[in-house]
Length: 302
Image (cartoon, rainbow, N blue to C red; front, side, top):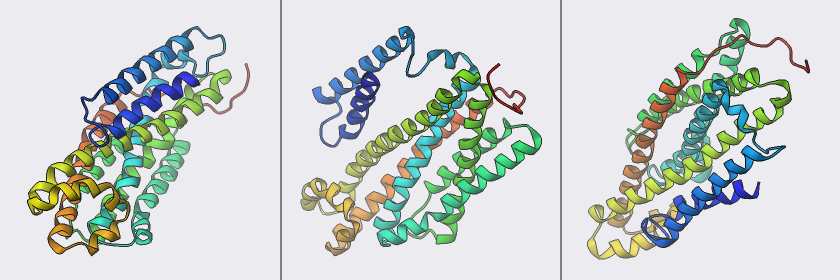
């Protein structure tokens, strides 16, 4: 547990600090990347020799569990990325309050619930589940692509439709991959298989937010010089983090500066969603390799 926590923490810190707190080629970022990789490798080695491993590596010899775990990781990236960056877009670009920005992403939640419940009921009635990750990944990919096209003139109806589409796709994949893992695991491994699927989804969310945050910060710093007076760029660049933490403060700035910041954030968040499209494309291709086996009607010790 110590090795896993330390390794993942080093990798996440490298992604969060890179390009903002420290340059990407700085000794700190390189050291965190190398340290995280080494610690994670040692964790895998330790687990391969432990009598009672925290995460039994034998689970991943089953292609259903390995494919489902990777799909859960990718879905975590898309889900947490959307939950973090959509409210930021609404607050900074469209100027709504923090409360209203939370309400505006309700269509995403509605889509997730509908996708989860609908795919669950159809799986129960038909006994088939492979089709849902395939269709879900395609819909999620299309959803994040459409979100990357949003701008200040995008209507609430349009953005709601995009979020529902993304939510439906995520919902179809989230629960079905967990079901596939539980259906494939031996009874003795049922608990750890379930927790590992949840772990990979959580890790996907953590890495997704870190990677997408790095993309947004990099794109934002590239856009600012082109969208505001040169004499204010250096000052504003140093205050971006504070301003994004309190979007209402952006509206109090002089019009040219406020417009430059909101325009830069719009482009940066669009880049975040666009960068999620290849991730969903990988998931779509991978979902075709998910093997479908008959669903269990009961579970217990043999």
